[in-house]
Image (cartoon, rainbow, N blue to C red):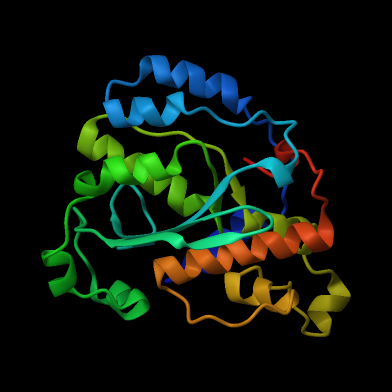
Length: 251
């Protein structure tokens, strides 16, 4: 996950969470499958999406994380992708994947400092189109799990529009937003400000710490995908129920 300025953006977006309407994704996927031209994208949509009333315990999920060249999906691009398949009971590390891909945007020095992916590594890396079939096949039939939906979904959408002329839509469970529901209900009050108390951080590492999950070194896409998967398992165990309808968790 690329955090150069990202934390402030993410926390501002989630400080006062609401309950925006979301589409019935199974119906939306059926429509998108008919509209898609790219065969890999069509197959992704044809795999369908779970109904909103499905208990979260019955939902196949895929935790996914991107490292990027910056924060703007219209100007920046993806440099690495990590993912692991998961359920509430198990994280399948053996099925995890990690790719470094060649961005179609400049790899700035400040982003290299964050994620450690160098110019020489991306120079020899494949374009996203080379792994697109495998990526979409792994995503198919799964609900995506991310930590801050403002990165993975818009970046993949923009990357596909640039490469194949079609974007992508899919629901996500955002573990940052789930933390925001608890810790960003209202801005700090006057007493809090006078006492120098700030809002609880909803960064991935800080959120994991509240559930006594171990510290992982950040900014490796595969490690961050694993960290996000573990965080969701802990959030559901502590604050929700295995029977919680997925529509109460996704966007």
